[in-house]
Length: 204
Image 1 (cartoon, rainbow, N blue to C red):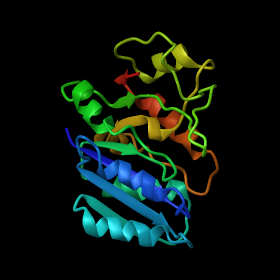
Image 2 (image 1 turned 90 degrees about the vertical axis):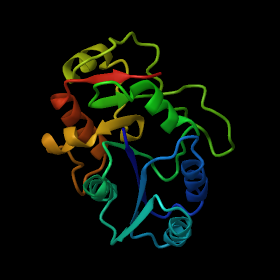
Image 3 (image 1 turned 135 degrees about the vertical axis):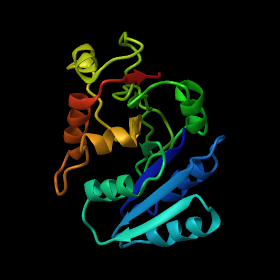
Image 4 (image 1 turned 120 degrees about the horizontal axis):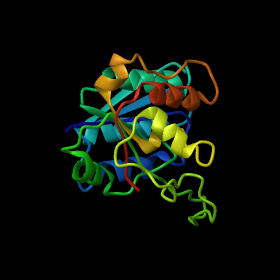
């Protein structure tokens, strides 16, 4: 199993180094890290350029500003791995996330893998209310998209692509991509996934 990580970037010089440091210091490295700079006007692109020089698994793309959806779609097109993950540039992963993906799902038949997140304030404290925790719901070991929707909606409706591992072949076969020029594009992307997915697994 190989994993490509896609990071859309726009004017996040305040956060991007923490994000990238976490990515390059995984206990098991991502096979490919695709950074798509969406026309940043601060030093985000310059910071990313330095990381791309240091780490051979980083691919850096620069485009005129076209929005996060377009940036992610470019990453999907370029990704050469079996699976795709997304990380927003003001977020960061647990250092063991890639290792956990391999441990839990290496030998599994899977189209969509779902997991959770914690909300961290800028002062470093975690939010008491966590809208990105779906562990309190009882899941089947394997679900299709309709079954997952029935189990979760409307009690917990998490659409963030940053909390998914997606089989690239599944996305291409079902023509699933982000809409361009639309706010809340994650909602459209996730509904397309649920309409097509036959094998969804969840890891708390």
